[in-house]
Length: 246
Ligand SMILES: C[S@@+](CC[C@H](N)C(=O)[O-])C[C@H]1O[C@@H](n2cnc3c(N)ncnc32)[C@H](O)[C@@H]1O
Image 1 (tube, rainbow, N blue to C red):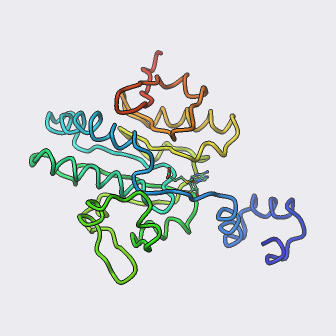
Image 2: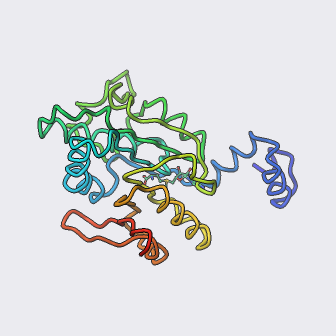
Image 3: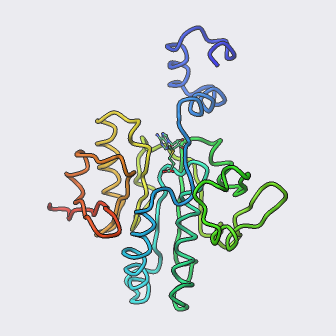
């Protein structure tokens, strides 16, 4: 890639990126350096927790009028499987419990990634036969996808509550608003402790009181303890935002 772009060293590349002049090169470097590995319903715990612990609370909060919208952030969404899995879990929950006074549209899933390449795939919502097989149960596949030849397209209702946007986790979170739940999984593993600390701090501020952070299964991180309390349940573990004074 260096040779392709006419640059002689990584320092030159770094300097070019910092000056942010050549967006094409910046995008190519991002794509070369980031791992976009993902799958549908990745790991068991988040989906069990969402279904059995968080969704009953969210439905209750919407019913009581304590909130008019539940906002969930997929903070390193890659090609969209995590965000769409969240939307499918919500829809299944509402259907399975025959809940009619709370609707799918009262949930917003905000999904972001630093890579425009993965976001383009996510927004399109079409997956080939290999990516569709990775973790997607047959029931969800039949309920939420339309087949077009060798690709499967996510149902319009599911897509309608998911909003994708390019966003670098190193930037300020202030304009993003508040979320009840953040999925920030398998991305901080690549960052330095200083950057992790900064992101964890910003994540705690963008969560509502009682807001929850979910990280990847192998990402147990002592840096989180200052802002979050680890909660272990039969459905899995999650990080609950500590009160401001804690
Ligand atoms: C391994 S994937 C994880 C996808 C998904 N969260 C999951 O658990 O399946 C990591 C994603 O983080 C994104 N990423 C890396 N650095 C980032 C940054 N600074 N800001 C936002 N996204 C970033 C990558 O582009 C990649 O799509």
